[in-house]
Image (cartoon, rainbow, N blue to C red; front, top):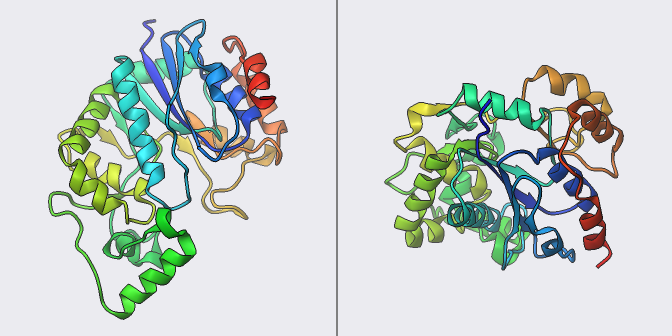
Length: 306
């Protein structure tokens, strides 16, 4: 079986032990890994950068401070994609977080992508979307200014309340129809290249506009994707098992009790995990995956102890 070239783009915020296990279990033939390390972290991930048995690990320079709801998360996605474009040519790109974990091993993932070569796996829905009822179906996310990165979420909400009182609104960019969806995707390199080029061509306007969109990571890229020439190749499925319904966290932190439902889903990845909440489920998933590439446990331990 041919080995597709795969790049994993990882946003890392917390739980360095889990990140080490995640990297160990996604390694495989012709796999490169790109990591954005939230600037708030005091962990030197540069210690794990470089060549490993089957590929390379890249840790981004000049990382951003990530605030929930702010535009910097979307910027970090774009930085990861642009860095990936500069360093290699791949068949498929996975955008995942450092709290994800694979439900399939590298051989199974490679086989799935070969069978579905050319398809793009993205979750999407029209806006307004019934799943966002508290934000006018998502319209309030963009028709009001949300300066989350500048003033934090609560002060931004106060500013939005003022705009509502004064009936101050703004339209969505006229060249795009708005779409929303999960920010995690599995797409072809050509599709990623198209997205990056589109962002470059419209950077000044789109960055200024989406800098003030609440959770722009769930709207900007989806809107570019679903208005693109690749639209007919998109499968409305991001191949991630994510529980948005059970709580008490949203999404739920997955535990051993979720194992059966995860594997019934036929997803390639699941999220979110937290080793302090339930390490047993990660142990179980690792045993099922089997045959992972060499561990980077030593390098991770060095990063923790810096």
